[in-house]
Length: 146
Ligand code: RB5
Image 1 (cartoon, helix red, strand yellow):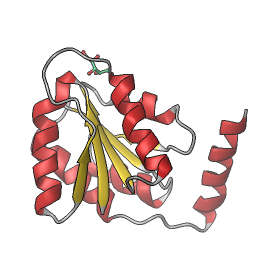
Image 2 (cartoon, rainbow, N blue to C red; image 1 turned 60 degrees about the horizontal axis):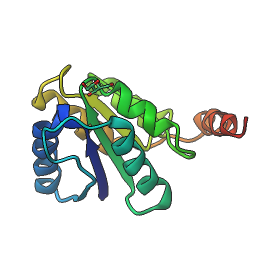
Image 3 (spheres, protein in one colour; image 1 turned 90 degrees about the horizontal axis):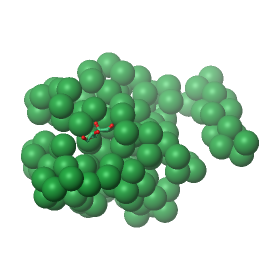
Image 4 (cartoon, helix red, strand yellow; image 1 turned 120 degrees about the horizontal axis):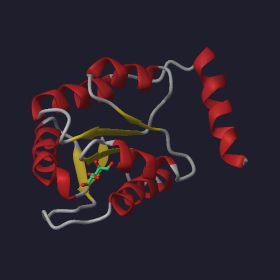
């Protein structure tokens, strides 16, 4: 799968660990930065990856900041994005099965790299179940029209 990844200065090291993990698992990864520890603004990177997902440049996105909160909030401002911030694998899996999330976020200051890998694996392996969940996702996306 083609996956976009982005992060702020709080998550550079973890980002590269996750890129390595994804590539070893056979995914193609597009890195939208940042790649340096200099202070930067998470909305920029959240929006970059979100726009890449919406345009179809990548199929799914992964975002990392200190908590995962700011960067996921930024992504969710872009029409068509359903970003979830997770600290454990069950929420990540269910967010795919029930909410058809297209961006996964987590916090480099909240969880360790091994937990992050477990979350990524669970999220990528899970499929949207459709059915009764489709109607709710449709309702969710209609809220963007307000
Ligand atoms: C940066 O210091 C920090 O605020 C950011 O990484 C993130 O945690 C925001 O939600």
